[in-house]
Image 1: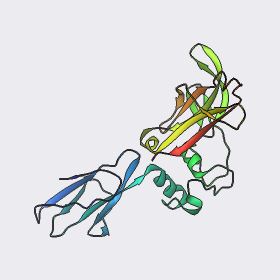
Image 2 (image 1 turned 90 degrees about the vertical axis):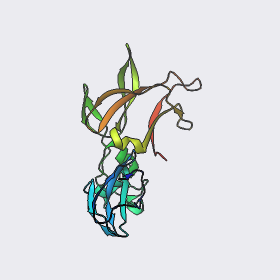
Image 3 (image 1 turned 30 degrees about the horizontal axis):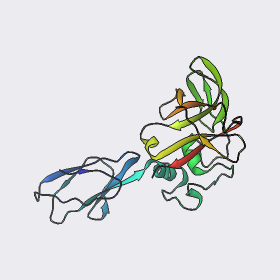
Length: 212
């Protein structure tokens, strides 16, 4: 029987009236399965779904992005509107919902906690920090930040950037080095460039965006 893929609801034709039929939903990268609708009525989240083929039977599978699933669990809605919008800050701490999703913070709690590691162990998820780290055999100043892994990482983009004056920003050219992590996040470090347009790289940030 048909395999449901993608991120939108799908109406599925079936054959063999009166016989049991099974449907399996497979979400695209960055999404998760949300549930079934049979003939317009909710039919739970069991996957695969087994039902009986009847005349005109219509089965639909719905999918939700990892970001929207996080939004629903933490903010009570999957819609990116009002206080649940990506750029909203319901806790009033200056950190947007999208940044809290990206860096593993609770959108309902005011916090500017920074990422913390001990050796190769991730102690606390949080905002990026500037630290000293090893790149090859040399100790260098690095931008350290936490990023999501697995399926949730498919829907978001992290771009480390550096600046000499806060007016212009340059994307990092060195590949991030993984130094710690847990089941859902990893901590990476990116070294500061030697210079930007002949000036010292004095500032760093991580630009976070939703992958379209």
